[in-house]
Every structure is written in C-alpha cells, then in structure tokens.
Image 1 (cartoon, rainbow, N blue to C red):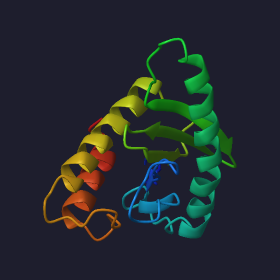
Image 2 (cartoon, rainbow, N blue to C red):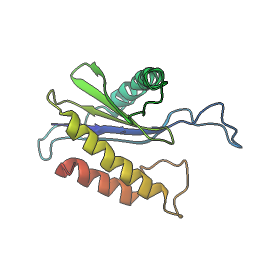
Image 3 (cartoon, rainbow, N blue to C red):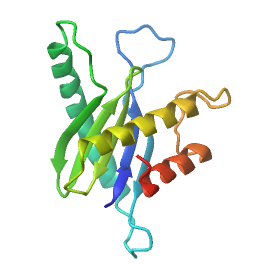
Length: 166
C-alpha cells in the first residue's frame, strides 16, 4: 500500500482561513504546508510524480468545501461537525480522504489501497493532527511556514505512516 501525504499519504496538509475573518495578513489560499509521498520500501519503484499529487490534492480541495457545506447544513439544527470527511473522491487508481481541523487546516491523504477502513483513516488523521498541533505549538516554529523543512515533523510523520502507527 502506498500512502502519500498531502491531511494530509500522498499526504497533504493545507491551511485556509475564513475569508470574512479580519486579519492583518492576506488569508491563506489553500497553500500546501506539507506534501510527501510514501512508497514501498526497497521495492525498486520510482518515486511517484509529485506534480500529479499536487494536482490531485488541489482538485480535492473543491470536494472538501462541498463536504463542509453539506455538513454545515446537516448540523444547522445543533448537531456536531465531524472533522473526518471520509472518502472525498476516487481518481485514477487512488482514493482521496479528508480531515479538517477547527482552525480549518485541511489534511488530505491519497492512498492506492482499495480496502481502507474508515477507522484506520480516522486514526491516521488523528495522529497527523496531533503531530501538526505539536509542531506549530513550538515557539520556535514560524507560523504559516511549510512543514517540509521541519525535520522533527517529517521524521515523525514518516514513522507514523510507514510503521502503520495509526
């Protein structure tokens, strides 16, 4: 099973704020904070095309907004919003799953496994969300900066995904 993180497997983590919220800076425009692909170790496989995963992740952002809108209308009667969005859509040989935090950070995961259980994906997203919160809570981490340069985050995310610690 290949997992890519962008959420994020390919795992991706993007962030956007409410455009109506007052901010001294321009709001995020769903810029990816972290994008990484994980392949089979020692399989001799070439690394997947990162540009293709960028496309898949950016296409998934539209589906995230649709799911959030449908959740908001369903929860209008006082229901609770679930951060786990589930399967967003299948594309080519991949399936895209999503998760949105309270601060509107979006974790997307692109997997090539057909039989992924929702419980496994929820656990993966919870672990990645906790890792993200721990990383941005570090007083020395520059807010709104990409996480690709953060060695601790990369190492721990790789450990979670490759060891299946979710």
